[in-house]
Length: 198
Image (cartoon, rainbow, N blue to C red):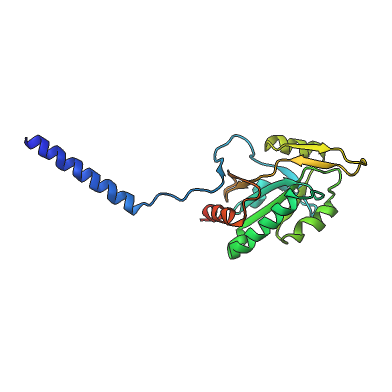
């Protein structure tokens, strides 16, 4: 009988401690976007930015990096993504200085350094356009599992590009963390970037 009372008392004490710990440690906030922490790809890149400087992921240590693959003549997905990211930066306020948005062209045939330099900073002066030759573009697309395909137009130069519409996000230590869905609006992205900036 004494053992039963002792067991019940011990059980009640453990429940009380468990509830107290739960109250002291609220559950961690969850990302709105896809958490891809620990995936075995999308680790680094070697490209040239629109100022002509060679870049790798290490150049941005200490910042959250948002990486989008697109092309300057894109009629819809690319400009809407860039406008959305400009809105994200505005809403982040002072924290935006710890975020680097990178636009990687999947159309190096037309997207020259000069064209990227006039296109990308129009959305936000802190954004960087990046490019490589055809081989470097194919390599980074493979490394990041990004799909892109030329779709012929009426003339050789009027083609469009089908491509992956989401963005990758690295934390301040350079580790891949998130895949952002296209067209979700500003708030969910701001929420997730703020979690990574804590």
